[in-house]
Length: 167
Image (cartoon, rainbow, N blue to C red; front, side, top):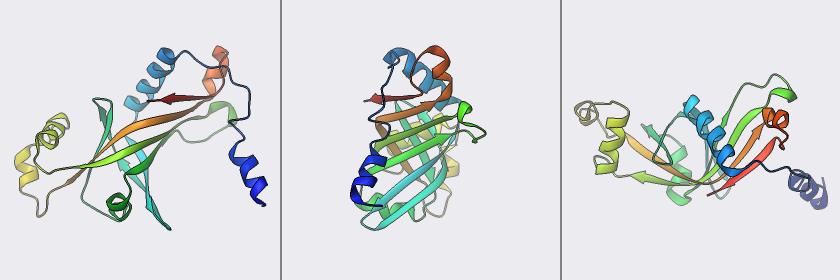
């Protein structure tokens, strides 16, 4: 592909006419979907290195929280706090698409800080259990800055199937 062809493909959705859903209605649909799921793909990267990790999340206080023992996602997290989360349903047809792409800023929460303890309590994980581990669990907190929504069901309500929330 030429540069122009890549640009055209990249701008495909941005150049389509949109019928925008009211933000409050969109946020309610997105919040319900986020809370109905608990697993995402977390994309991290730096330079030529990229990693996409399936990981369990919790969503509260407007943020995504993920406990992790470690792994190569931390190569990117050390140097780049920009991340993307994807939450999606299994594909079965164009008429039944449901997914979110969430761009955000990641932060590693200090082990046993107030925020760390609060999340452990939210997850109903006893602090004593976390303290017994050979090394502390890492807690990744992602603050969303943009959510791109693809819900086929929006078409039935007269809205475009792609919507965006800027935070």
